[in-house]
Image 1 (cartoon, rainbow, N blue to C red):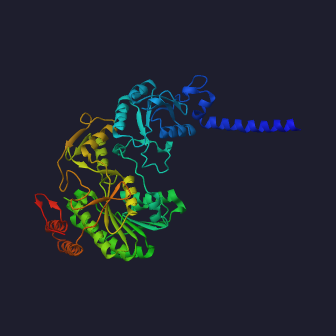
Image 2: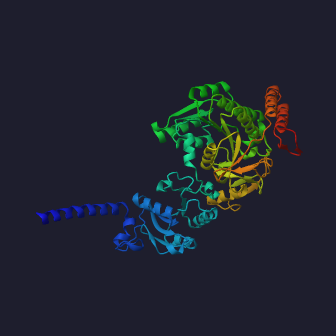
Length: 538
């Protein structure tokens, strides 16, 4: 009858509804608390849902915005050892509110007291791209109270645009760069990478490997990792295969950019559409002692690879350059500058291939960078060596650099040089002091700083462009472009002279070095050696 039917469906409705409420309550008690009258982070019995058990860590979350709300939701959805106790936010309108059942107790001025009063074991900074000063302030509080500082990655590092508990990490020196979010033109990148064969020389290196990781996200038809060092290339291959499986067609090929036959063989077999040329010798002091190797790899290796690319109808060729190529005072910088001139010259000879070079400064975390050296010195020696208290450098993180290189690749045309916006130069001395503080120590008190003087070929500061180069804006706010200026015939003559010098002086190292440096100074119009400025050159 009708009453029975109505009663039956009411029971079904209530049963389904209660099951959903129970499921959500078990899965996310913080979100359900307000609906059940559990205000101010308290249950009806007066207990706190974030109360600490023997193995839990009481967490103070800094930032009651979107990221803070997301991370709280994830902490409740996947309960573990972390239990959020309270939120801190400088917005007074949020004070006294609860977010997912966790109270906002005040601004940053009460952090130290909140840590002590609430037995906080961990501070979680849920403000992506937080200013350097904020991070250092929290580091100091943690050093004083014994709590640990965790942080969410910058928005540049969060590919999914959603933060989760898997994103929580220790504070790293890269977090102090205070970068604005880099917004990529995804459509423009996808248009030139998706469905194409992409080859990365030096693909196992720190920059090359990150380029491979970034390129893989844009669904290339095939990726070729080309490197002379098999171990790094093999490890990257395993990483990418684990991440993408059958979705990424991957080929690892061992070979040298000095070997023209091998380059032709690879390009003939796999027919790459795009080449990112990251293979290079880059360590300034080492190249001062082995200038011939810098010339062979950085100049002739670039020439070999770029020429092979042009002859095999590669559509885009992107050279990874450096700010040390600007008014260089060392062998490495000079060889990279000549490499830029090489691709500019080839761009005129082979207009069907879009050549470009991308300049940027030091990359945090790359092999041989200053950070691992400082960390080792802090841990083992309790002293840090800095060449000069005023020396500065431009810095980027590896993901930042790789993303902007790929973005610049979309703009490649006619041998242009692209310069990445590196932000403000950073004092190496400040970098060392920040790293000491991140280690829970104090500069000069716990770790001494020693100034050793500039090394051969080292500059006090780096530049991103030369006086005769005119920078123009591109469609991307973080990338600037410069048109090529090169005497092609003169460059060809100087390349032949460099090749002769290498062969002629192989058994006479001292004479070889002197002659090589002289040739580099002639080939590079604004190359300067100590006490000597030459106007001769291109």
